[in-house]
Each structure stands twice: as C-alpha cells, then as structure tokens.
Length: 301
Image (cartoon, rainbow, N blue to C red; front, side, top):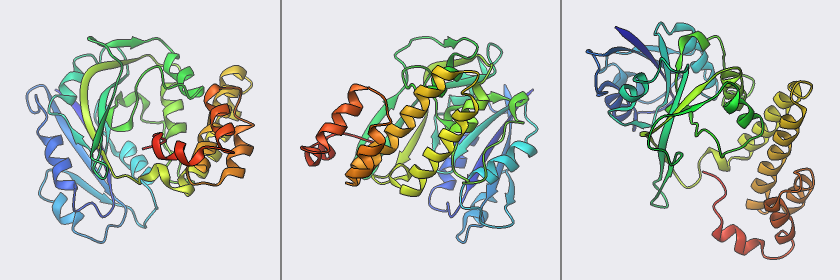
C-alpha cells in the first residue's frame, strides 16, 4: 500500500492543530488506498500543542530550541519521512477530504502534483479561490514551472506548499535555515528539471488574518535578499529568466514600501523593476494619489 508522509510544523498551535490533524486523518481512501505517516515537528511551543497532538497517531518531535520559523522542522521532517510521497501542511490549513485521493490518482504521471485552493481572510470576511480554470488535470512539461518560478510569473501553475504532493525522490531538497521561514528557493530547486501536474480540484483552504506574514517588513526584506541571491546563481545558465525574476523581486519589495507609505524607498526599487506598466503606475501615483491606491488595491495576503 502506498505510504504518504505528512509534515506539519507547529508553534503555539493549540487553537488550530486539532482541526488540522482531524482533516488530515479524515482523508478519503485512508487505510484502503494509502496509509499515512504524520510527522509533527514542534518549535518549542509553550501552550497545549503537544498534549493535543497526543490525541492523534502522529510522531511528535520537538526542536531543541526555538528556530523562529518552520523551515528547520520541515527539514527534520524530510529527513525522517519514509513515505513514497510527501506533503507539507501548515498547522492552520484545512485539507479537503478528497485531497490525497485526487493527487494520488495522477501521481504516476509526474513527481509533483498541485491543485486549486482558497484563501479565507477571517478579519476582512472575504475568500479568494486560486487555481487555473481547467476541467481536467493540466500537465506542465519539464522545466515549465521552473522557468515560471525563476521569472516570478504567476500565470502558470498555481502553487502553494500545503497544496503539493511530491515524490520522496525529491526529499533531499531542503529548505533554507538562515532566515528560517522562506520557501521560494526550495520551490525553484524542487521544480528544476521536473514535470508537474495541476488538478482542477479544490485541495485545501488557507486561513489568514488581515495582517499576515506578507505585511511583515522582516519577511519582505529577507524574501527580497534571499530571492535575488538565488537568482544570481542561475544568471549564467538562464540570463533572461533570472533578470526578469530579479526585477520582479525589486517590484514586490517596492510595492510593500508603497503600501506602508515609505515612498522614497519604493521609488528607488521601482526604478530597478523594469518597464512594466504596473511599476510605472505605482511610481507615478507615489507622487499623487497613493492614499487612494492603498485604500482600494489588494497588495498581498
């Protein structure tokens, strides 16, 4: 029987972890079509996370110190995983009951499977569905999604960590631990030289509040720094794609500074961001109209 390893990193997750684990263990086909190995790696929680996890058949591990992000735990989970396939699950995500069944149905066709998901903003009471408008599984050829990621192009395969199922043959690809919470470089390396599939099915729901990690300056600056550093490593092999990706990273940080009203920083970065209409729009309105733009345009989250 196929074994799927599920890696869940926790930190003070008592309010959400029961619901998350319950939806993982309520997957259709569990025990008949596949078995689960659920690895929970805790980052030194100080609440009841450990006790709540003990109610479920999981392997509970704890980092020796608080690492400040999920990546150390993800890497521990990747090294420990014994499944044929691996999934990552955030501690507050909700999987649809058919998630694994749908992904395993096509897993022989490609080593990486993604699918549609929805974001529910609990603070602003709105939901957003993300996924291509397709009625059947969509195959992406070798390196197609890799080049999409290099160029920071969001028009191709829809990807989010909790929506991925990937072959254990890729488990040697680990997350960065310098910052401890970035995943762009992992995704780039995961998709390099691989084919992949996107499913039309809704696989999971991601819950966020109005001000999530996307609004955190430390996250934004670290993401910018690490992303550009990675792309510089690909410049000799893929100069065009890397150049576009670096410009996009400048643009993302520029829009963040625009959002928090640090307009001189925003303008400097926008000038490095390429001649994209969106960038010129933000540059010009940074002198006039930025309050109105910040009020009505959805930036991140």
